[in-house]
Image (cartoon, rainbow, N blue to C red; front, side, top):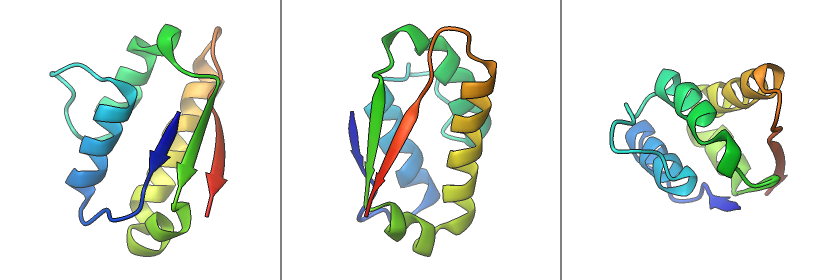
Length: 91
């Protein structure tokens, strides 16, 4: 899976992009708590590798969002018995 994080103008726009990329249900709350919850719901369908394009742009423009994103992926990997999300950050 490739997620392009360029041209993100708001936290809400980032959440919408993640909702679409991961195929989250309509009840996705568009926040990091909901992101963590929904990751576990789609665990079986997750790709082995996720490539994040324009990661540096996200870190520069929304540093706290980038940090929370990494934390949620790490939390998922620690708690998952069946899947692990490996992220390749392409700049």
